[in-house]
Length: 357
Image 1 (tube, rainbow, N blue to C red):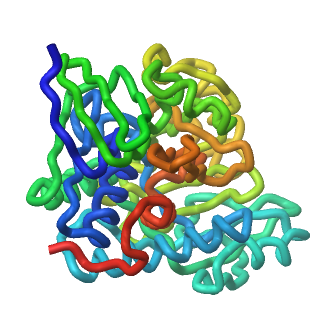
Image 2 (cartoon, helix red, strand yellow):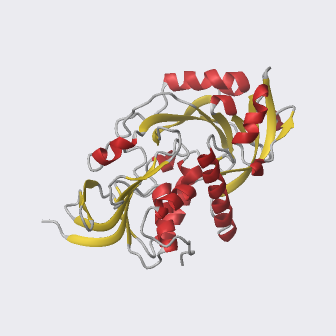
C-alpha cells in the first residue's frame, strides 16, 4: 500500500539542470513546496562526468541568447559566492581562415574575438588554412561540486529524495501521480522531467518520445600533463572539439565529437576503449601531436540531444502539468540557468525572479 504525499512541484532528476530548475522555481515562488527526486545521488549522472566548460557562443539565435543569459547568471552567482568552483579562463579559437565572418556571428559580442598568429603557450598549432582568435567570457566549473553546493542550499527549502526511482507518471485533471520504487506515492501539482540521458525510462518514455530527442555517447580524454598557470582553453571550432586546462585537477582534458548515437546510459561502458583513443588521437594529432600519446585515459558517458541541436523545453501534456527540460546537446552546464528560466516560464509561477533566501 502506497503512502500518499503532495508537493506543488516535483523535479525528476537531481543533476545540475534539476537543481537549477528547483532554484529558479523557489526564486519565483519562495513558499512553493518542491520535491527533487533522483534514482541515484544528486549529481551522479551526466553531471558527474561533465567537462564543465562554458563557451560564449551559440549556433542559433536562441542558443546565443541562452548562452548570454547563463553567462550573466553564473557571473552573478560567482560574485555572490566567491567560493563556488567556477573558474574564469582565457580561450583561443582555431577555425577555418575563411569562416571569420561566421565565427563573429556564432560567438557573443562579449567574446571580443581578436586575431592572433599562434596559440599562447604553444599547446597547439594553427595548421595551414586555419586561423586563430583569442577571446573572453570563457569559464569552467567542477559541475559535480557546484551541484552539491546548490543542493546543500536548496535543502533548506526543498525536499530531496535520493536513490528513489520514479516508476510511473500519471497525469490527472488536477494533479500528477508519481509512483516510486520505494512503494510510496507522490502527488504533484506540476512535474518537471529533467532526466538527462535517461529518455527511455518506462515512467516517461511515452511522454518524451514525441520530442524526437536522442542520446549520444560523449568521450573526453585526460592528458596527464600539468597545465601552466596561464594556459587557456583551445577551441577547435570546425571539429567541435576542445582542449581544457583543468588547473584545479592538475591535468588537461581533450573533448572531441563522438558519433555513437542511440546509446543506453544504463548499459553504456564508462571506460575508455581502444576505438575512443584512436578517434580522439586522429583529431588531436592535427593540432597538438605532442599530446596524442599522452591520451591514455578519460571519461565516457552520454547526453541527450534535441532534434534542432537546441535544448528542448516543452510541455508534454496538453495542460502543461508535465514539462520536459533537457536534451541540451552536451551543454547542460553551459545553458542550465537559461533552461531553468524557460522551464519556469511554462509553470504557473510569477514571471519576475526573486532571489531565494
